[in-house]
Length: 192
Image (cartoon, rainbow, N blue to C red):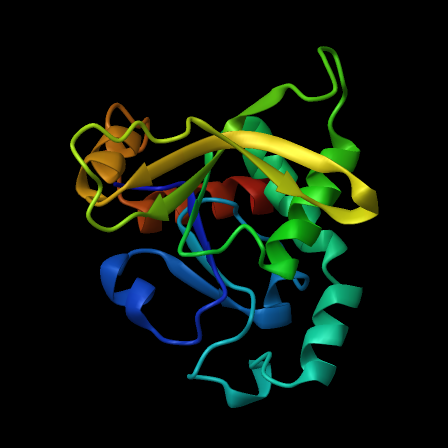
């Protein structure tokens, strides 16, 4: 799977090993400078490689929530152009609820208020799924202001098929994200 970008709250460097051609963007670096918006690992809660970037204490989280609007805007940009897959989060996570709330506020409402947002998926691990179990296809998540947002749900005890499905027929398959990012950067510099 070659996702357009990876967004994580994990501090470790695991994703940099999984995606070696992707550029890590740590903590508040997401706000500084020009982002190429392809082939990046956004480590929004910091990284062990820069202990000053870590979001660890309550004060750190409060500051993160105060500055989260840019992240939500970036996620909204990704959402309009690419599927957004949440992996390894709980729907009750206040950070996820806040980001989804920001996305919900920005979306134009053309259909019913409870319509499923088609490009957001929430992947959840469900151990020992019985053969006759029919997982929910949608998830209603409570967000800020007493509202809720309906997104697509994927429950599975095997993530492989999910990653293969999201990885099929991607426009950047077979293209080095590092090379593509360099070309885009040069194009932006030339345009400027």
